[in-house]
Length: 228
Length: 210
Image (cartoon, rainbow over all chains, first blue to last red; front, top):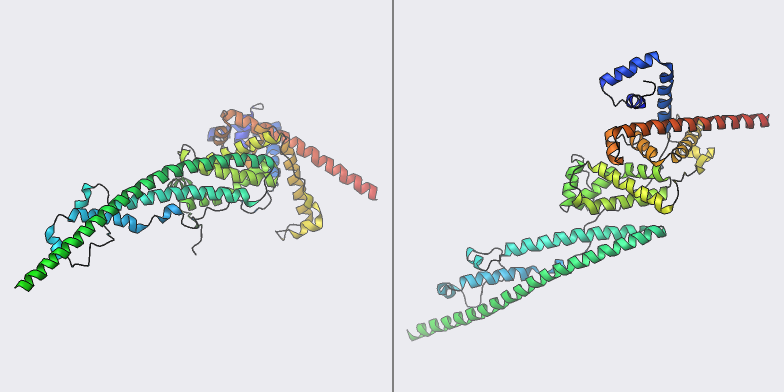
């Protein structure tokens, strides 16, 4: 036992089985040398507890919500809604009866909150757009907050040159990464814009046609009532 | 304005990790506030300088944040964090090409020390004694080989089990126990020698003053 350090250490830290513990205990009763050894280990453990860590302020600047909406967050919601609105009109345009019932000046509502079943033929609903928008927003916000956190930390106080260089490299790498990612996202958003533009054009055309039809109808009705 | 960080005491580290990975940044703030103290203590006791410890703590949490997605919960979050910190400390020491530094307690001036006394029952002598002891322990620890020092740090100040230390250091369980035993034995000898030196110094001072 006198040469079995592992057992003694397990005993001192009380990380041993009951059987091991009993065995060490039994040995200690008989061996003065090991009793001294155990006492010395315990006393050095006590001494270690004197080792203080100085008080310190937190070094972490908490991640904050993004301060101001960035360009990608300013994709106008009306544009999204208008895209959906165009879908509604194209779905409903077939019904001439509906046109007849519409007051001449009041066209289809510009903002639609939900797309009817007829819209599924186009494959993109207002909800789809909103979900996509939210996904993109969330992703960008996460990345930007992380980057902001980094920038804040990096600039909070002067760092040793060796660390600054390492930080700079890492920072550049992250920035490139973020830019690449933004490019991809910008492409996606541009595609959405292009789609919305074409929806808007369709919407405008149809709106114009509707107005004319309604005007014609109104004229016809007026003619008829005059003729009567 | 609502507080930026709301305490989420009911959630485990692993739950907070999952939420943070899903984009809830405040959950990461929460993890930091939970673990900053022990991580700082580990870095400080390993590097010996407050400034270095602060830098390592910042970097450790940034690395953890960046690696969150890669952390699949194969270990406890704290173990993972300890590992990152220890790696950073190792790199730090290597890069600076020096052994851990021991900051000598400049505050051993009894008058100055008396001002920062916390417990009213502790005498100035005790406090000075404790400061000296703290410095003596720091110095003795700094002289230990790294693997013994880290094992002792993780055991004494962070309460890791033998097995957890073995996982951190990638070594067998028996090696951990041997390192602890050797480290503590060397420390004991050094501390005893230092105490003997101080005692003889005090005796010499007393004799020369009389």
